[in-house]
Image (tube, rainbow, N blue to C red; front, side, top):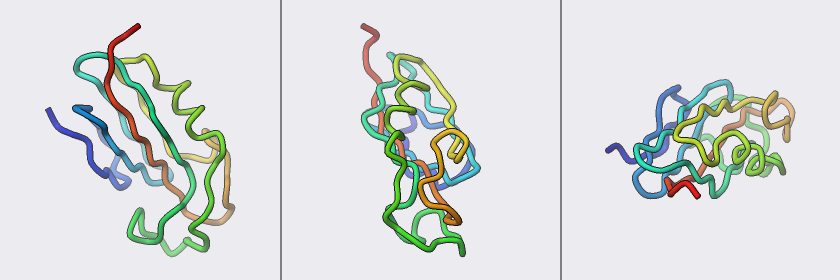
Amino acid sequence: MLRSGNVFGLTGTSFCDGEADTIICEGKSAKLFCATGVIKISSAVYGRTRGSEVCPSREITVTNCRSPTSTAKAKILCNGKESCTLIASNSVFGDPCRNNYKYLQVKHTCGQLK
């Protein structure tokens, strides 16, 4: 099973075996998938907390912005499901830093359905 690493903006699938750390660049999407059990989001950050080494762009003016509702929204979209698709966009997570290229970083595991 593929362990998810840093996706860095490529639309694709993130398989979970242990804790997965997936980065989705703004405007892209990724499918989270658990072969056994269900998705459990531990954290999600939409915004920008690092420099151009993550989702490079000329539109990076700040590196300290994040949507305060990122984790809650990702949990609503994915927790308890075998798979889900997350889109890194202002329409889903709000715009925490205007005119700045953002990304969504999601950490999740696969657990048992309760």
